[in-house]
Image (cartoon, rainbow, N blue to C red; front, top):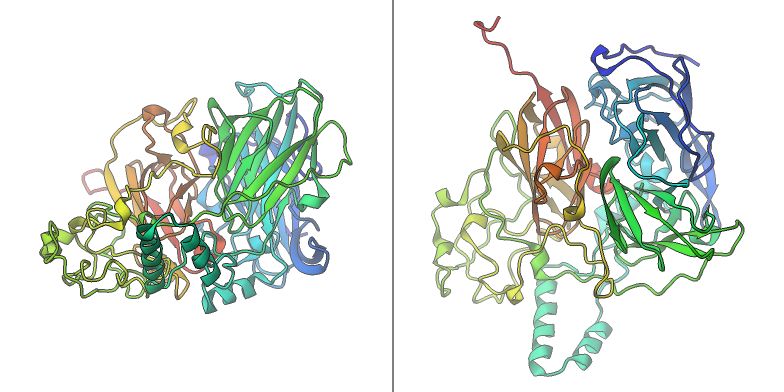
Length: 626
């Protein structure tokens, strides 16, 4: 096997040993002591046939398995991993959430000097581990992650974690399709609603009308249907892809992965959402869960009954089953399409517990259209001024606010609307009843962004709905259920003191559902400039979701610090989920030189354009400084 020796970054520490567990899907032993000398590991990517749903289907595997082997290392070690590509196409491996040199991050064309792993070749990754916690690794080439190239990665701390446990398991959630992922994307491009099996029908309309208490309620139902129909949107389109089989550690529910325990023990469950397109609502009926780590970082323990885990997030929880019974670990897809499930039990071989009925499916409302977001046209972090490309943001609309009571702001001069947006003509919503707001070309894409600084949609009606809370997760749980939110996460320690940002960078999440393209600030990745950060500065990314889909945004190489109101205890996350129609400020300390990927972690959103390169550069020295 050919090996390419890569130079180390001396500033990132001395070389120690890397330790990985032999693969036992999902199960992890207690921490092991590192060896005295570095150790190399080998991963082989190749085509295989897998039978997940009862019929053999093509897949891509790592060491002939899905998920890939559990890699377990120790903080302070230097890792040497040889990846051999036996696929018929270029490949890569990205170490998700790890802080490492750009050249080892594994994103072709973005990571410094890395252009991917050609078929029939071996690439050697080499980097020190300067953190601990639960992470994962996956391909960052094309749609290979959906086909099976993903696996868990656990780094044990040098100092014991500030909580104890008796057993330790990975619970890796994923979504499997028997379809070729390229066909899935082609179907979405041809018909964005191809996989929406929950579309509202005439029968459902008649049912809603029959249940309405009075004529006013029936009129509101009809008006709502007309409005959504005019926009060519469907409020039940929660997830782009349905028909998945949901897996725990590569097993469907009927295969019942089982985490063993003895009554009275404390069990650590390391939840990893390795799905391509799915958010999950996680609960263990009859047990409360204590969240102790978020995205690999220790947090003040918080006890919850449920939590939502967005694509690519990780949460570590402790549970304490006392009575020796079997418990179901349930991860229900956010769109209520199915369950990933497993068991906590005192013995192997038990049949799976019956799955509960699905909770009611979520239905979007006009509040999920968002707004008002406040002024746009801020610094976008690009070297040159950036403008929105037609077709990825709201088109100019011939409407007139001026004739509406209290809506004279509709005729605001263009200067009041910020920069970087297309001009917007005056608009008349009063004559339209909001049913023809010109969203047809946008599908689930951008609501009217250009006039955000001058137009208040909530003053205009929309059912009198308040702006969406960017943190609260509505899982459909009964009243009184404790559901985790980002506000509940308080970092036990942080290398970054609380301070004001040096600048604010506008990051608008945009798209066109009818064409199934996704973008940032109205520009797909192939059209966009990089976002350039100055080494050592603190920037605030203002993430503005102008679409009706969730977007779990992932920044490589640096931590994101969502501004959740906890001051110096705001958590450090590698993924931040931005809910439909909401805005969230996230601070970043630009302390990692080089090129880094920044993207939505919904695979088909990233593949169709919701991605940017972030470059961290040291300021050029002046002549006097030399």
